[in-house]
Length: 279
Image (cartoon, rainbow, N blue to C red; front, side, top):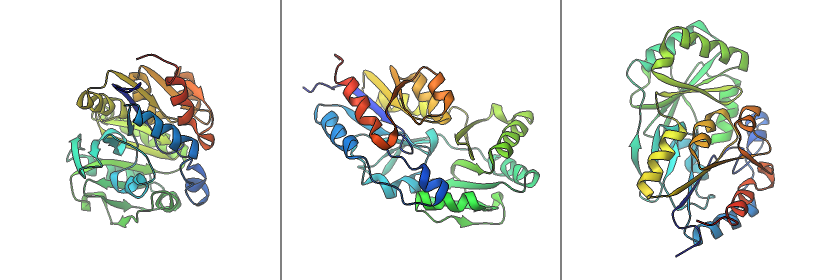
């Protein structure tokens, strides 16, 4: 019996477990996992805790980094569109976009020509339409080449999510346009950074999939950590939500417990706090 038996800790990857913002914004190399985080996670798991990644990244975009993350549970990928078992190399659950998503996404691209979109296929292929500078910076971050196609209807199904890429002001207009069409009733529309707008199936968010993961694991206590708007659903679901100092204001205002900056090992702080609790 370990101290953390029955405890699930789910963490966002980018800018929570590892600070990757400079790689996204400036094309720099993705830094290694902070050693404080590594040591803390190894202790947490040795004491019976479940550690899972809950990332907005598609599987293909996370696989190149999976080896650097100590984890002993399946993870939530594609912003809540799927649970993936990294040990068995298989999807356990999915919540996919419907057939109309490509056509609606194409309408958006035609109305907002400066925007790009990445379409995430479950077979670890990322297609791109209207690829722009943000797309290229995102490629540097994920280390997965984007396969360009002329239009979204050319992308094969099944799709986990669409990722719109543009200036923040344009993405706000895109989100409002889609809501005005009534499409907000069919999809989750949520920012993962200021210039990345995620579109997944309704109910496919990190909170919903962390809930399903906890049920699969039989976890009795669930804690989550994240820094962005797409982390809010799982922070709200958690017994306690944590956020690194570099989180956006909306996360800070949500009542999350703030720990040190992601660069300095935020997850180690989380585990130190949990280590003082009784379960």
